[in-house]
Length: 259
Image (cartoon, rainbow, N blue to C red; front, side, top):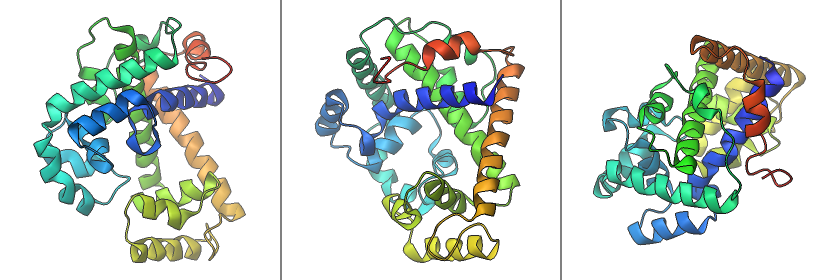
């Protein structure tokens, strides 16, 4: 399975999953849910994803925000009744997907998640019973695949010697964003982000201004290739050695020229 195809799949599932990201979503269905339940910001992010897991695991699987922030928001998440809230979020996300993509959704997604999905959060979304509602099931499959790739990406980063925060900073620079600004958006303390930038600079991966060096770009691309290999192995373990046909159809979902 080609790396290009795997990245097209990642991009497509990412677009679909953003329908549930309050910080990057203007979907009226999601905004109505947020207003009705008073669940703005990270409370929505956490509750809409983690109603499927024991709260003892929340900080461990939501690695893009500091564990201290998860602990701080836990009382409000409990108030929202996470297990019920995740169903409301899925319903809102499915409605947004149907509105944004009124054509019949591509078939074949379910084949990609049939079997053991890697990572707690990806496995949790894969385990939610499918109802036959095409948009809801497509969203669940997308969430499972996206969270699996995220888990495998962090796993590869750990083995390459990067902390979660370092990986966030490197990813931000790799995508052309300002690392410290991105870290602040996810509520990482500035002193912690600065310390990790220094550590990355000491390894020759970033300069003092937070830009990737040539070595840093090469290692980040190697990490992406490693992630592709891990995803391909996870799919192969589920009996999917070639998903070219599914990916070619799925890749157009919500794309401006194809959705």
